[in-house]
Length: 197
Image (cartoon, rainbow, N blue to C red; front, side, top):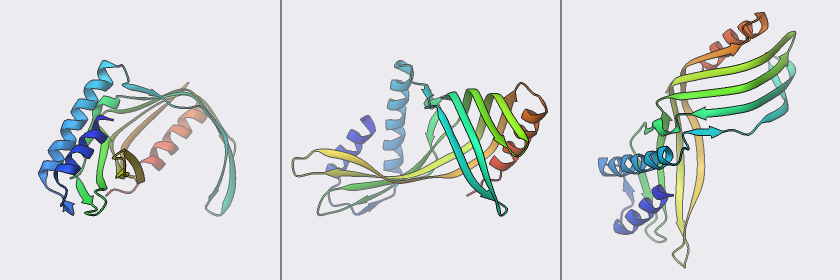
């Protein structure tokens, strides 16, 4: 919320700006991240509890239709306070409406995903246990518009978001039986194939 308010105030200060991509915005976003980091730590929000998943995935791999039952319980994303900006900030502003669009990317310096129960079944592979995952090179690029109405109320709208980097991924499954070991190796390999920028 602090980030949105900060951008809204600055957008009025730079009312005639069409495109801004200088280091001033980088500093502003970095300061907003620092303020948010303090709130995250002070309010014990450094761990995000993710919703449980109980789905059946239908995926086509190498021309073969696969049906994969997937169950994930007790998943947690750790170290949210390790967020940092990964690329320069670009600001686009509509001179008529005053609305601004922000484009940048964030990543977690200490990305950790823990899961108390993971279960999936594919072919003859029946995987079940706990999961611990780390990813030391990650980046989420996004575009947010701050839209001001006639009553000067400001609302944030996420235009799009995409993962642009997901490398150096390490995965552990426990107990380390044959199925879990095999799945651990395959999943780590597949996740590390994510294209680099």
